[in-house]
Image (cartoon, rainbow, N blue to C red; front, side, top):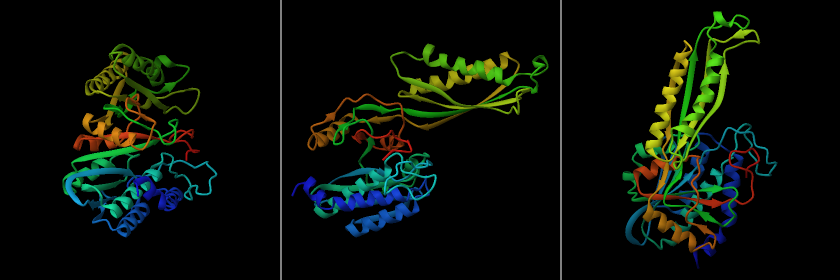
Amino acid sequence: MGIKAAIEVFLPEVIGWRQDFHRHPELGFEVHRTAARVAELLRGFGCDVVETGIGRSGVVAVIHGRRPGRGIGLRADMDALPIFEATGLAHASTVPGKMHACGHDGHTAMGLAAAKYLAQSRDFAGRAVIIFQPAEEDGGGARAMIADGLMDRFGIDEVYGLHNIPGLDVGAFATRPGPIMAAADMFRLILTGRGGHAAQPHLALDTTMIAGQVLVALQSIVARNVDPLKPAVLTVATLATEGTGACVIPGRVVMTGTTRSFEPQVQDLLETRLTEVVTAIAAAHGGAAEVEYLRDAPATVNAPAQTGHALAVAQGISAAVDGDVTPVTVSEEFSDMLIARPGAFMFIGNGDSALLHHPAYD
């Protein structure tokens, strides 16, 4: 019996697992119910090793093949998002304000399906290491598992991951060698001046005006400092003043946003120029600026050889495989695992669905 036929035998179970996880979403590292259910199922499959609490709340299963060989890691993420669900489905979230709006419930179910099949067949060389990661959305889950010895402790030589993607046909796959998803950096800018009456701006130091100048000037960094052949994004997402009314000039403004890039040199340039532009504009108007810059997730970079292997596997089960997909500027915590070990990340089609992180997503 082939792989597809073998998995179709227990496909109703897989759908049931997915819908159960969808009904009971959990956030960040607090995926205790999900992790407990995952571990229970893995033990029932007869996996050789099942360990919990890896990286606080991650789960790892090891399955030995019939022949010696490498350790191949397959990652699935388990956490949900702080979003109120609006699907109206029978398996919709039962937890107000939390939902699986990124499909990690599906990834977890796919990881379990792979584990069940591999534990039954054992028809492979080496070790299959199935990784169930917490806190992909909040960030830090992959790093926590790696810091807990994930790669060395379980003998992982290569690591692979996938993510469902709306707009790509069901049954289709897409990836590419090299960068496939961007590095994500976050910033927080605190502009301080001197509050006062809006009718007497000459007696105050208007931070709202400074913030406006900063907002416009920041857009010149990508347009005029970054090589136009190298992708980059700089977005100011929030701007909050401490003003209390139409006649009040606030003495403090806080702005937050993100930058995205694919190359370390561009990432360095964005951080340097953002800091220079913000502090110079604030000083030019007599104010002050504090820049907090956090490098969140590095770029997701696929190793060429491992990408070729992943493509060959995909081509063996689908006629719709894109081996040179356009990189996307969203980010993915799997990038940390690809820094620790060579591997590849792939997209799998979710069809004509609502977008990721949308309350109607399924």
